Image (tube, rainbow, N blue to C red; front, top):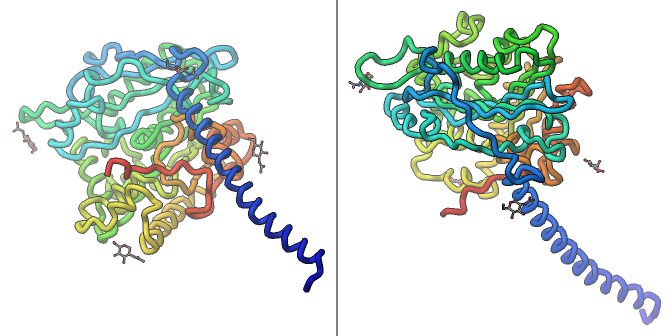
Length: 427
Ligand SMILES: *[C@@H]1O[C@H](CO)[C@@H](O)[C@H](O)[C@H]1NC(C)=O
Ligand SMILES: *[C@@H]1O[C@H](CO)[C@@H](O)[C@H](O)[C@H]1NC(C)=O
Ligand SMILES: *[C@@H]1O[C@H](CO)[C@@H](O)[C@H](O)[C@H]1NC(C)=O
Ligand SMILES: *[C@@H]1O[C@H](CO)[C@@H](O)[C@H](O)[C@H]1NC(C)=O
């Protein structure tokens, strides 16, 4: 065994192993440094929008004639939107993004909401940054950067679908005008140029994603017949699933929202004629009857849905889910199995939609919620990807009919590009 060559070989092997470890460690540090740099770079550009630090902020416009039309927020104040004009080849193209922020289902929850920006324009920020899908920076938003962009503020508490007939007439000062707000804002946008739009994308996040689906077909009808009009719901595909204690928490919640705010009148007639109105507030029913092309961006492990549909506090009296709900990395094997079941339910609910030839989807396996209005998740070097495409690239491929986009990620934890949220910091 005294073969020097062999010894040399083993020596080399050992040396190489040590070196390899050092190399990997070195690479990891470089990678980490790079990630941090890219991250802080994208955070900075998130804050500043683009080269000019001031231009990413867009002013709030309060709706004209809001009071005359009865188009008012929960508290009776005027609703609003932020508009940045398009330029160059984007002058006649419009991208609308509806703000999200849950719903209110009781007099008490709507009354507290009316003292926040989600129920009153008195509390809204007057200047907000336009990032991700709303950015005018071609690096952040390669296909839509020069379009007219509108962010529609959410202040009715029922995804722009409440109706005044159900307002309480006993001195409770709450206005349920979501549907009227929607129509009034659309009229105003048509009057400032949207009536001539050639290409339009209606989008929204969370409750705004649901509003996008609810209004998609009606929106199509107010625009030019030969315009290209499509709808993108980000994190708006709320499932009608049982929670971990076996209760239908979401289904009861939606039933209360629909009842309180008189939403039935705004729901698809084809659906309401077949089932209870609140069921028609669930996206899986809405997309069945929607004729306008729809794209769904939704994480299969949507943290809002996990925290409020799958394992709401009421379903978890011993706080077994607390850590898992704050950070998916804290979930144990049995919880992960339940989360995989939730993903399977989502894929099952999407099965029919998947056959829709005009539809598109990007269902990534991340612990996230809205992913289109942040530069870091919409389109950046470190964005979540499926098949190496960012959400921005996938949506644009579908919007411009470049290719069929039906992206479904492999199950957690397979995708290293995810930006998984961690809410456990404050504990
Ligand atoms: C963003 O703004 C901050 C503060 O105004 C400034 O210090 C920073 O250099 C800006 N970053 C970029 C990328 O413009
Ligand atoms: C009006 O009716 C609602 C629903 O029944 C109730 O919750 C609320 O307290 C009432 N308000 C007043 C001022 O009586
Ligand atoms: C996971 O955690 C829950 C709640 O703490 C516990 O009931 C369950 O037995 C755990 N499962 C495993 C596989 O550790
Ligand atoms: C992924 O896409 C980027 C450009 O976005 C490209 O540079 C890279 O080579 C692609 N990677 C793979 C594995 O295809």
